[in-house]
Image (tube, rainbow, N blue to C red; front, side):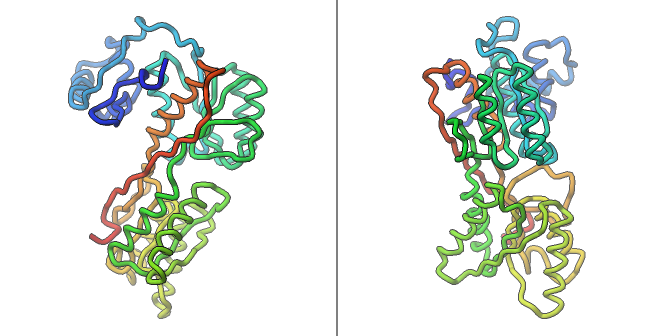
Length: 354
């Protein structure tokens, strides 16, 4: 089965899948799956919502589960996510689940909680379970885990990480984080910011390194007209961003110069910075300081000013990773490993100037 046969596409190249229908109908992916395969399990009210979403999006369902042949790849795959608290990885999970639903398979997700040792344990667990393959959102290095799975005959595809140290060739599906950093910096520069700050921590993460490189590239293109300050937030969560915002407020109160544009490596950091600046009452957002995040995650924390973000294509990354994994499983001799880079997009909100 080729990747082109694994699901419908809307006009152009944008694939319309089960997760798109679920989002439009405001229901869970499993509810859409039941609508397609076990309609007796879905209420009439939800059926009407799902049908309207399908009609609007132009989704063409595949044959019902009972009419499909079982996938030659086996029925179960594992997904090790870096941290379930980060909605990028739950978006990736949705994309994986969608392709699995289209191919009569199931995915089991497990949370590494940003712990490399736990990641290795989970990979070994999925190997023992006899999974046909593993999608791995790596905490940091993944070479040993890829090699351990390969030795057991289990294929691995990496998401949001590429491991050049692995002795086993492996496919990777990545967000273009260099582009994300450039988009964020260029958006602030476009709105008149000339003193930028990149707020980040965990520089051993590839995504953080690449976003910072993108920011630097955008600044360097301005030939000295724009400055760049690096601020170590000592963490990537809301409370860490709040400390940075409070420190900027103190600088302003003391007459020190402050950045007029802040690029947060994580959206949680961006929310924290905004909260502290608004609470401080000295620097206004976005009039005095524009703030932009680099992920587009679903945040349980809200900011008094809505955060502009550069959104990661999480569900598309999951779809592509699972498609690659199926190809690797079903075509073990002819499959060619690859690196796929998917582009982020800007989502303007109120934390940056018009």
